[in-house]
Image (cartoon, rainbow, N blue to C red; front, side, top):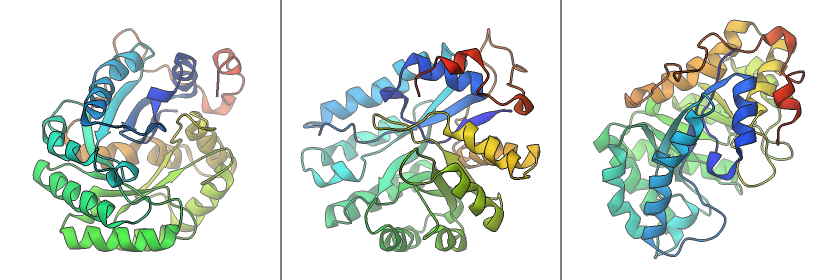
Length: 292
């Protein structure tokens, strides 16, 4: 089983997590630029962060056999802080760097005018640099925020097939599917979605244009939720091919639009060394000792 986690914040995770993810089948991931919890107070903080995503974190992942990619953006929450907004002028030089596979996370947090402006400008950058877009839907008023998101996407003229609308649930999957955009789901221990709900949605809506991620960060989250979802799919009667489509081929197809994916095995790691899906991953000794 091969897994591509299309949204995970490894900057906030440990090397134990990388080991556990590799043992579970993760071979590639995308780390979106996001809010770090502590408010940034200058553009320089973003520059250091972007440099770390594209340098140190990419190197760190490779030590554990995982290909690391990133998305770059001013996130919605910090778009409301005038001290942070000038980073928009710095984005173009990062959007052309190797391993940058999308503009993101962009979109809405509180649906303010400042977020509108940052969202629209970054959609323009995505069109200019021919990159896909990762859109964050708000945690509050999610359905209204998703409607507003799709309106802005339509007004921008960007092709819907280059847009991933993330953090979806039962309330808004239908409108995103109808809009022709990609549908992203974050599987969490307590919030957002869980494996069983995700399987039910896959049974109802199919496997096309759907991405499943762990979105693991500094809060209570689980970087193995992609594998747990894959196992839940198999237990519910989905085929190995269905799992491969959702957990590998779909993220490859979406982010492959950037022309920046690197998916060949890292030297020193076995290209065929994927865990046996029939055995389950809980029995793996690496996983038993891992921090999740």
